[in-house]
Image (tube, rainbow, N blue to C red; front, side, top):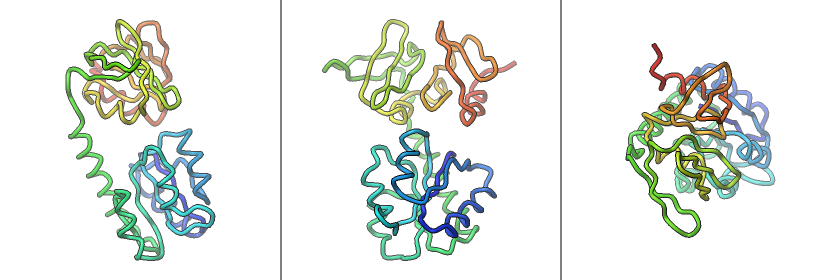
Length: 228
């Protein structure tokens, strides 16, 4: 999972960084000293987990959550327990009190894994979906979707017959697609693995479209291919 650390205290950030380094299922994208710095990272990168301090100058951790459109999994790390009730209103996965112990850290990571697995099982494996565009709802057969491309606050769903521009997030669209047939190839692309013509190094082709393969998504993509 791609993760970031957000804490204004250097020693606290270093302690969490050390825990992340020891956990091979985590990929640290950035270690931020302020909420504003973290928000900029979230706008550019696909982050799945945030280790977030509550008390920070300028913008607190809870204020930061209020300003995020799509909240990833969150583990709060703070020196005080009294924020616990308010924290869980934001559906955080766990709440660790400083100093961070690696055993407690792993327990929190296991909770994240369990939640992600549960959400994956809840994902829709339907043969069709409805999308809203031009003030109308259109039914799309998922097998006809070639790829989905991020366009700022919108996504471009490319099908065999036409394109649909939809006001949504990549994460929301991905959750509605059959996980057996679709995979994230890049933070800006979801592809129908059954429609891939060729893969070479860091690119793949669907129809005449060339799509980049992000390093952090390559392993999951390759696992979904029927390779001889």
